[in-house]
Amino acid sequence: MGCQYFDPCAGGADSFTIAIPKFTFGRGCLQESGQRAKALGMTRVGLFTDPILRDSVHVATVRDCLRQAGLDLEIFDQITIEADDASVLRGAQFIREGRFDGIVSVGGGSVIDTAKASMLYALQPTDEFLDYFAPPLGGGKTMPIKLLPHLACPTTSGTGSECTSITVLRINHLGTKFVLANPVLLANEALVDPACCDSLPAKVVASTGFDLLCHALECFTAKAYSQWQKMPDPLARPLIQGANPWSDLAARKALEIAGEYLQRGVNNHLDHEARDQLMWGASLAGMAFGNSGTHLGHALSYGVTHLIQDVTTDDYPVKSPFIPHGISVVLSAPAVFRYTAAATPERHYQAAGYLQADLQDAGADDAGEAIANRLIDLMRNTDMPNGLAAVGFTPQQVPALAASSARQIRAIANAPRETNLTDIENIYASAMTYA
Ligand SMILES: [Fe+2]
Image (cartoon, rainbow, N blue to C red; front, side, top):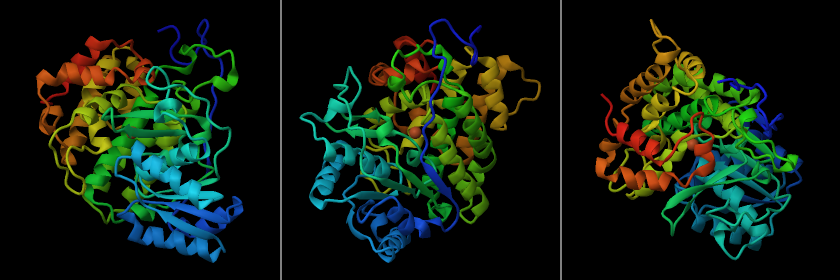
């Protein structure tokens, strides 16, 4: 505990680095897209979106604004609801053939993530798709120092991808998702218009809302940056660098927003105040975890996504097997925080307070239980499945889930508590059903 939280540790990092894009937030700000793209030097734009959003008012607004600013554009919409390697390779080909000098993305995390990665693979193609991913899975290949100018416009309130240097892609032949992280993937500008969330269905607001909540909770409770090893080359300092004073600031506010507005935003689509706040919270959480990293909640979600069988989620027109990302994260989250709280009870106690957990008669030693109970409450009040069993998992699948998630090495190492395969199995076993 001597090193908690940002006190120097022997051999530990003594600095942290923050990267966020130029950021515009406000109702109606999509109207600024043309002038902003032009100011970024764009003359011919590759506009990334998905097949459902293509005919939306949001894409129409951006398309019209780009044209009014005198920019030429072509639309790419061949993106699956979970960004995958196939979408990225199609996007890369679109960029190469289109000879664009800038990219505008309008959509949820899948669209923005696909846009980021497509630029990378268009500008510097690789023999193997995994070459750019971190070892041992990937080749750790050096990325170009610059991609095209990118203006990112999110239409959901969860991913925070517009503010991060991270893209999460499903690798189809492995059947699971992996993280690609590099400063070059950061968009130049984010244009965040909460009006995009007005018409989102409840389940989408719930899933993305739990995603933002878990981004904030995981990065607030992550291992301190000063406990990660100091890098001899400052430019090699990773984005997943642990909790730091900057990520604390943004994560704390995002937790307060989730505690206050998540339930309201899900259950009443006319509650603009709640939905606007959730959009703001999602970007804040992105600014936080994009500069600190998540930990076990997200690491364990990848096993769930990998092994999910036949489940349908209302409001998601996607063929099974599929589970929305935020739901895959929050299903294990109560069990995760019961486990991690023992390592840093004070931190967890603070986080529980920000989330409006019931702390009456509770001390720091009760923090894990308080967070878990608060999460379970929020899940119940937003019609989420009550644990992994509710989406079809059985205790017999725990070893397979754990083996799949154990590949998320950096995220697991970012947890405040040293975690081995048996620990991961125990967490999954405790996440089957919540009393
Ligand atoms: Fe996430």
